[in-house]
Structure formats: C-alpha cells, structure tokens
Image (cartoon, rainbow, N blue to C red; front, top):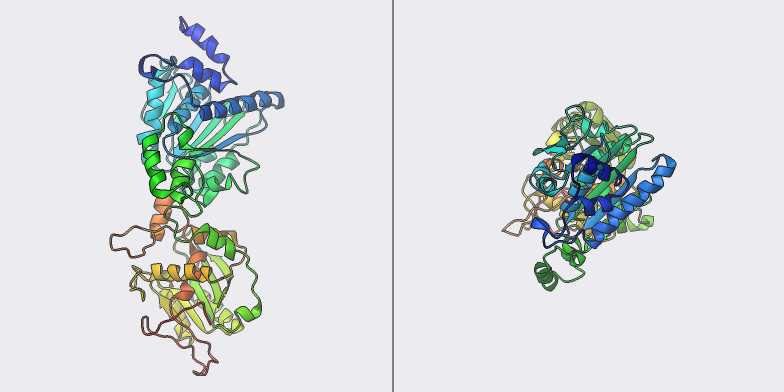
Length: 492
C-alpha cells in the first residue's frame, strides 16, 4: 500500500495501459470485505488483458483504432463489477479522462450499475481522489471536475446530444453500454459517429444478456463482427454465479433451450424469450424464390400503414398468396388526398382485388378514396375484436396469421427494415392465455424499437378474406364478415 498521495499517483501512472495490473493493485484482495476474493474471474482477466494489449499496440500507431469489446453473458457472472473496475481504471490512470455510461433503462443505470461502482470506489485505494455521487464520479480537484469524470447518462432517441458530443482529443474516452441488447440502434449509431478523435485512447464496451436477436448488440456477432471483439461468458464458469439455481434451470428447461442459452450460456436465442415471430422463420422467408405459378392464382391485396409520428414512415405494400413486396415508402404525410391517389394508382396498375388501410391514422385516406369511388376500400382497426378467440384483438390476429403464412412458405423481399420489423414485436403474457402483442408505444418506450410499419403492412393483408374479382362472383372483390367462414389466407 502506498504511504502517501504522491506515491499513490506515481504508482497509478504505471497502469495507464494495464487495466488488469491496476485492478490487482487498487483493491486489497483477500482482506476486509474482499476476504473471500483473490482477484478477478478468469473471463474478467482475459478481457482486461485484451484491452491492455490493444492499448500497448495502439501506443505505436497513435491510438488510431477504437477498442470495441462486446460481452454476451448469462446471469450472475460479475459483469457490474467489471464495469466498475474499468470506470475506476479509466479515471485513476489518465488525467482528464471522460467516461459515459448508459444502460437499457434509467432504473438499471441508477439502481444496479452505479451502486456497484459506488461499492468498488469505496473499497479502493483511490477513493479520496474522486467524488462519487448517485449519477457521476469526478475529480476532487476543482480545476478538473468538469473534464475528469464519468457520468451515468440515460439514453433517449429524442435526445442524443450526450452521445454525439463524445470528444476528448489527446486524452481518453470510454463509453460503456450496460444491458446493451435493449439500447436503441440510434444511440449506437450516434456514438459510433462521435468516436473519431485522433491521437486519443477510445474504448467502447458493450455488456448484456443476449435476450434479442435484433439490433446492434446482436450484430456485433454478425455483420459488425469485424469491428468488435466478442465474448460469450457461460454463467457456469463464473466464480460468483449461483450454481444451485443454474442446475434448477438446467433440469427444468434443458441445455439447448432458448431460456438456458440466454440466462446461462450467454448465447443468443433461436427466438428471443418474448419474440413473437422467430428469426428462423424470417430468415427462411428472406429473399425466398417463388415460381409465378406458386402465387399468381391468388388475389392481390394492397395495404397501407400510415405513419404514426414524425419518426415513422408510411408504407404501401402488396401481397399475392405467398408473395409479398413493398410498393412504396414515404415520410409521414398528412395529405390524405395525395396518399389516396397513390394507392388508387397502384390498385389500377396491379388490378388489385382489395385495399386494406390501418384505421389508426387512415380514416382520412379512406374518406378520400371513397370520394374517388373506391367504396370497397376497408379500414382495419387493430383494437377491434379478433375473428380468432385465441387472439386478444385484430392486431394479434393478423400478426398470428403472418407467422402462419411464413411457416407455409411466404416470401419477403431482401429488405433489412422489414426483416427487423418482423422479428421485433414481443408478446405480452396473459393469464387467460390469449395472444397479445406489445403495443407500438410500448415497443418505442420500453424497448427502444421503432414502429414496425413495414411488418404491419404485411400483417394488414390478413385482416379479411378476399377472392379474386374474376372468380365468378362478379367484378367486385368479395369480403366476408369475420367469423362467418373458415378461411386460410395463404392457401389456394
């Protein structure tokens, strides 16, 4: 233990590029509250050493590369402790380091991530060098308290300034995402664009349970894997995990269950725990080739999902049997007459048999269409009664029909937005067992997911039964009241 502050600071300088050495130095392992701990776990050691090795390499190339590490893990592995150590190392070993920490929710950030930091700060040799509050830790030197600090910053897609302003040229920047799977892609994108300072140590760490098969955290293992060093940590290998509880889960759910993969093995699920449509189903439909005779006998159904807010898009699409395509997307547009004319044009060009419009924001479009003589256009109200008693409402019903359509061999275009839309919605558990989807508002507010407009445009096509105009029933499309006939919308 150093005898005075000057000796302590001189020691800390030696660990600027050695986070593992710092962790072993700054806490009195095996003593006091740490009497039963001899240091970091094996997975923590590997990650700390990896960061240190990259920093030492970076010293030779003026820190031109951003160090990016993503950790998918099961429960109870000591993740929050590692986050605290990295924050402490970052601040203690380089003057004027700036750190931003965010999490999936403000509650996670303030009730779990930050209290763990406060604990490790209190136990550290360097506790007197910094002031640690409920939302920040900063230098006790008044001349540096604004620039030498770490802040807990709740994220918001409508307020990204804290992440856009991540600059600290010539010094050190650390960004930490806790429970990163549920942090909105926009925050990832803004952060990525901001980490551009030259001659600067830049470290970006993302931690989380791999609960979702969507979003940027998942893509660290897929299309972004060239940018991220990825780790999967099995709770069974962690020193601090609850082995008894893990064994119960193993006995109950099995090694290969999605529950066990996510909660214990640190693996992404085949289907997220609450995900309504599995990734496997959508992967199979993505760009699936169909011969014309597999769908050209079926009626053509045009759909319109109007934009709900300024961040959403208006989507016009068409399904014919097993084939689906997006006809047009537009930014939010309040000119109902214009939209009605565009739909009418597509209806005529495609010789469509039906037009279904989301009733939430589509009443004006329908009225304009009726004025133009398109009396057969119909509104679909997501909250109306489902024709299937197993579904809570029409929205759950049409998405359930979409899932069945995918199982039957439905084909979607290679459209990444549509792909994400289809695997994004989650279920809401109900005591009566009825299928219910999380609302669009909840998807935005709780999950940070955008409104699935393109997914809704496909689902809308299953709202009512349709027969072709030339099916012997006259030129008018034929609709049946919900529940009057057994109808399978994806079969001939």
